[in-house]
Image 1 (cartoon, rainbow, N blue to C red):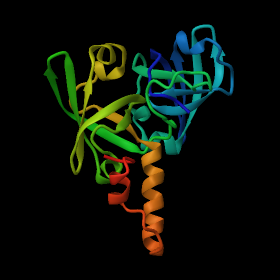
Image 2: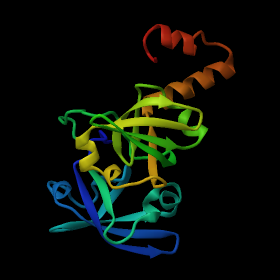
Image 3: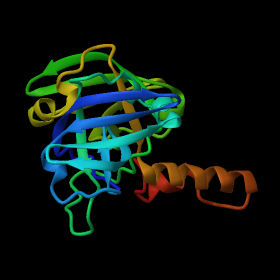
Length: 216
């Protein structure tokens, strides 16, 4: 489990493309502290298991399913990636609950500067936006961000200067692919409502949840 608060930018040292899989080696510093083989590190929001540790780098194996559903397949030598170690029980939860299991991808369709903020519009699909709501949370390349507007197939988020300067969004441009993970609690609520609706036995509706402050 992660918080979506990026600890550092890592640099891809090597990407070995294998048949239906890949092995990735990343130069890092902060996330190596206290890490050991078998631990989880989120790379651009993707939960991966450390298989090798060196003084200034770590390696992970990437399965075909992960390559197919994320932007890790686009990485090259010298690419920068967002890194975050799995949270500990005593860690401050500064972002929101992020599992590192990416739901899909989107593309940056516009970037607008408004005051100190950088407003990004992300184009995606309805199976992603169905789980988003204004002022809710979304993880973009593993970064916990608050949603501003949600449309049928796109949404916007606003970055403070710190996030712009210390994550990959600051170096990505229009047309770049980003990994998306919607809010875990929202997915469970939606699943529950679908099941209850199909059974025809529940009085819990979206109106009920809105009235009692569960959703906006």
